[in-house]
Image (cartoon, rainbow, N blue to C red):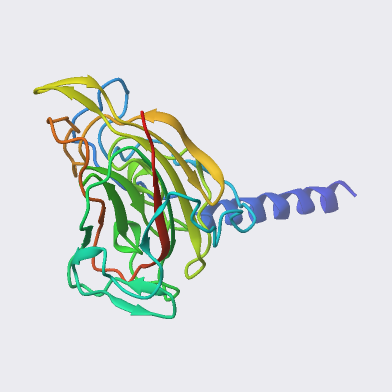
Length: 260
């Protein structure tokens, strides 16, 4: 009996070790030579920054939400009349990035509630920042990242719904590639006296109905590998949708202006 038990334990141990060997550690993606983010212990795009925990929500409760009274419809699925820049494909109620450049609204926007829906490509190509990459760049300066972050590792402050280069989302609620997702963004524009910053921008982001940033302070303009910083600008500036070379789709985009 002792011999049989010993053999069983040895076999179990060998199997456990084999499974552990097969389970490769998650690769680190990011940088170790970038500056520290002000007020944080992490560097910009820090390779050691923990990944947000993954949560799997149901379909977004605001998917297909109709614009409320007083809202400005930026894209209703039919044309790009309110935009300038790239010549994106428009069909079946959505517009799709096609490497012709980003889109910029013709009118300036300030503090607002912004609703939009996006879908990363169903056919998965690339990894990390090369997979389903775009961005919602408010006032042409403050970016909420769009990325395929479903089973895709990248630096934490660059994953989907991150305030790019500043704050990762509280949780990763990304849906599978090709599925429609929602952003509901409450944005409060910064205030300046001349060149002096009086009040930084703040943002609340709901990704697929889940609050991933709650009244978060934005640290400045978006920067890749660099520190965010503020420079004085008008109260209203255009909104930009980034063309990063991936065929991301957008639809149902509207804004409701806010009075601070």
